[in-house]
Structure formats: structure tokens, C-alpha cells
Amino acid sequence: MTIFGLWVINKAGGLVYQRNFGDGLPNLTSNEYLVLAGTLHGIHAITSRLSPTGPSSGAQVIEGETFKLNILLTHTGTLIFLTSLVEPTADAMLQNVYEIYTEAVMKNPFHTPEMPIRTEGFDTKVTALLGGR
Amino acid sequence: MAYTQANPQNPRFSVLSSSSLSSAEHLSPNSSRFSLPNTPSINTTLGTPRPNLRPNIYDRHLSKTRAAEVSASSFAYLFSEVVQYTQKRVSGINDLERRLNILGYRIGMRVLELNVWRTESTSKAPKREIRFLPALMSIHTQVWRAVFGKPADAIEKSVENDDEYMIVDNEPPITRNISIPRDMSQLSCSSFTAGIVEAVLDGLGFVHDWILPKTPLPIQYVQPARVTAHNTPSDADAYPGRTTILIKLERSVIEREELLK
Image (cartoon, rainbow over the protein chains, first blue to last red):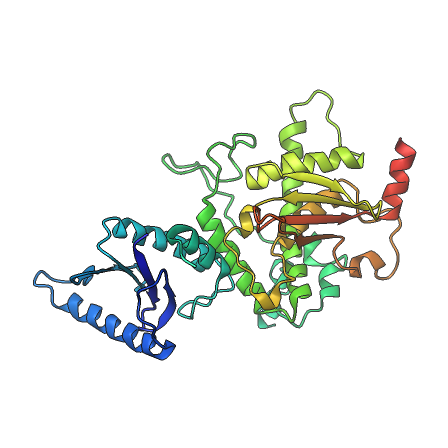
């Protein structure tokens, strides 16, 4: 599996879910993660304003030399990020993660929207999909 | 409370409108559990039905259920809102479960009636189930199928108490997407299902002792629900959402069963 990280960012730019799969990602403190998430949210917002052909949903892929960052903007403004090596199925993976998110998080009465995701069902299903520890 | 005062005639609203109502009131004989709204909330007096319009739910055929399915997602969102709404108005897990039970009870009454119409109206010798075990079997298969689209997974009898029976569902559809937080691990949202089962058993003449009403407030009404739901995850983690609906029978029902043997 070449998926390394999964982030979910709420529409205000706050990091509500962050998980690492496999080794290799730098060890950051939770505060650093929050800052990075806010920055990424900002970058995404900027890219959505740069479109020459009217309104845009913003960046979908940020690609580096060795890795790829896939971004999914949901209808409600929540952003889902997936860090991977050059992974051709990352798009499909993102859709699956989104599906799990709607199933296990949005339909769970004990989840407060826009708040950090502490839902056991989400963890289990993400683990089943992406592996990891 | 303002809502109940605005609608003093309509007890339908009083079930959840205010947290100041005690649970005993909910379970009293005059509670909304047993009452019907005075005004129909759905306009049933449509004139000639317009073409291209789905027929009114009251005009549809009772037994044709093929196109009558409800989207599981829509129901999941609705049920999620029901739990959130209820949770804001209760003081503890027991109260929450009791209110879900009451909501389920209101569904169970209708399920029983509908099922009886479906199965007995075409029968040459219509009957009502008076023995407990066949009634339990019909809940396990027919009620479950009508409500959840599949039969329950098992019926068990308690080895310790002869008045306790259990219906087991390995993966209840209504709680499939619900993750209970750790601090509320006692909670089972299947109390809703327990309410349905309780209503069906009540309607068939089990569980509560109807024959000897006690005055002024019969003791059985203030007792907690006799049908309860419990989380019983299976050992091998195969069914983390496994739920047991526990039915505790009245002593008089067991005595009656003995007589009928």
C-alpha cells in the first residue's frame, strides 16, 4: 500500500482528522499539523480563485517529485487529503474515504459537525480500506 | 414547554417537547403512547387523485411492498437526528433509552396492525397468536422483515431466568452507522427496536398485565420498559454491532402459558 497519510479538514480550515499509514512521514507535533492543515486549506482556497474560466473547485492534485497529494472537496466544503507515492488509484481511494466519511461520521448522532472526528466506526473502516496500524 | 402549551389538545407533541415531563407521565395510561392525534397531520381528503402523482400512502395497496422501500441513507440521517434531538432533552442514558423505546412503541403498534392485516385478511380462518413462542417466532421473522427487510438472527431463552427471552440481531440496520462514545458504552440505540417489540407483544396480550388494572396509577406503567436492548458484541469481533433484545415476561403470562399446554 502506498498511501501514507489521510487528513480531513473542515470548512473553516481546522484539522478534524489526521492519520499516518506506514513509515516515512516526518514526525510532527499536533500543533504543527494544525498549522499545515490551515495553510493547505488556504492554498486550496487560493487555487479556486485563480481559475481563468469562472468558479472552480480548486486544486485536486499537488504533485512533487517523489509523492502526490490528492485533494477532494466535498459538497459541504470539507476537504479530504491523501498523501501517497505516485498512486494511480488515489482518486478512487479518495472517493471511498469520502463514502466512509458520510457513512460512519455524518450518519453518527454522536458526531458534532465541524468538530474532530472521534468515531470508532470511521477508524475501523479507514483501517480496513487503507491498512495501517 | 411553550410548545405543549400551544398545543394542549395534541398529545403527539408532548412526547419529546419538554424535558420537564417526568418519565412516569409518559408511561401513564393517558400518555401519548396510547393516544392518537386529534387532527390528521397529512391531508387525506385529496379529491380525485391527479395522474403522475404517487398515490397517497393511505390509498396504496397494503400488501404490495415491493416499491414501498425507504432509502436506508435517508432513514439513517433521520434516525441520527432523532437520537440527537432526544439526547438534548434527557438527563441520562436510561432516560434516553426510554424515550427511544417510546418512539419505537408508537411504530410497533402500527407494525402489528399492518402485519395482521397483511397476513390474516386473506386467511379463511383468521387468528390471533395467543401462545408466546409462536408470537416470538413471528416477531423474529415477520416483524423484522416488515421493519428491517430481513429476519433477526437468533432467538434465545435465558438459562438463568425462565421468564427471559432474547432476540439477537448480528447487525441491526438502524445502528449500523452509529458509534457509541466510550463514556456512554451502556447505551444501545436499539432501544428503539425494543420499543417496537414491546408494542407488538403488548398488542398480542403479553408482557403487561392488562387484566388487573390497579388504581390510581398501575404499577406496571411506572416500571421501566420490560423489553430492553443490550450491546453484545460477538467474541471473534465478527459482529461488533451485535445487539440482544431482552424480553422479560410477566409472571402471569408464564402461568397462562402453562395452562394452555
